[in-house]
Image 1: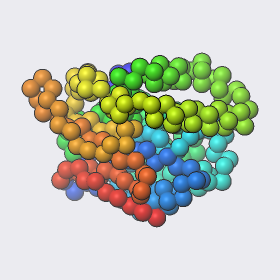
Image 2 (image 1 turned 90 degrees about the vertical axis):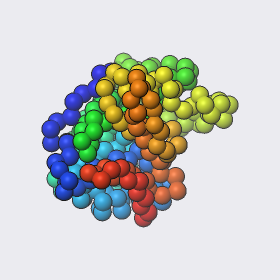
Image 3 (image 1 turned 45 degrees about the vertical axis):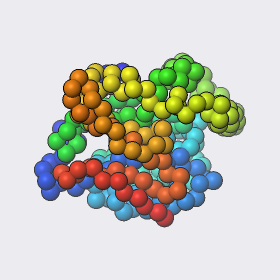
Image 4 (image 1 turned 180 degrees about the vertical axis):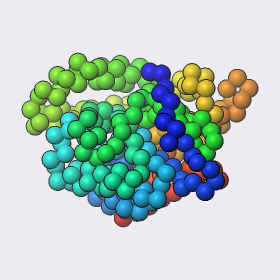
Length: 258
C-alpha cells in the first residue's frame, strides 16, 4: 500500500515544539494490569504534553470488533484515549496483527485517526515511515498468507457478522495457535526481512523507519543505495511502558510505569 502524506500540522514546528510520542505493542488486556496501569499513567501524563501521539499497532492484546468497547476494562482505555484527543493532542492509531479489526466506531469514540499500513510523516525535519512492522516480516510466508486473508474486507465482514462470544472464542484459538507455531519457528524468520526493509526505504523515499511488532527494540543503520538510513524498533510493554519521544534534539527512549 502506498504511503499517505501526513497533514502539515503533523510536522515538527521548530526547536521549541513539544515531542511527538510513538508507542507500540501494548497488548492491553484485563490479565495485564501492569501494562494497563502504565498506559493510564502515559495517557494522563506525557501524552498531554505531546505534539502528537502515534500508537503503531497492537494497542490491545486482541480485538474482535468495536462492540468490545462494552468491556469495562476496554472502556477505561477508550476514555483515556478520548482524554488525550479532547486535550487537543492529535492522536493516531494503527491496526496491528492483534487488533486489525479496530473500526470507525472505535475511532469516533476515542477521537483517534486510524492509520493506513504505511504512512510518511516529518519528524524533527526527517521524512519518517511509520508502520506496525508485521508487513516487513516477508520471510514468514505462512504468516503473510494468514495476514493477507485476515486483512481482506470480505473475511473481516464475515467475522464481524458472527456473535460476539463466537468471535472471542476464535480470538482465543488464534492466539493459542500463534503461540504454538512461534515455538517451532526459527527466530530469524519472525524478524523483518532485510529485502523488505530496503524496499520500504526505496519506495517511500525516507531517511528513517519506525516500527514495532518484533519486540526487539534497537536502532539499526541500513545502507540503502549508498545512503545510511535509520530503523528504530520499539519495545513491547511486557515489563513496563515504553515509548519514543522525537524532538529537535533527536529520538529518545522513555519508560513509564503505573
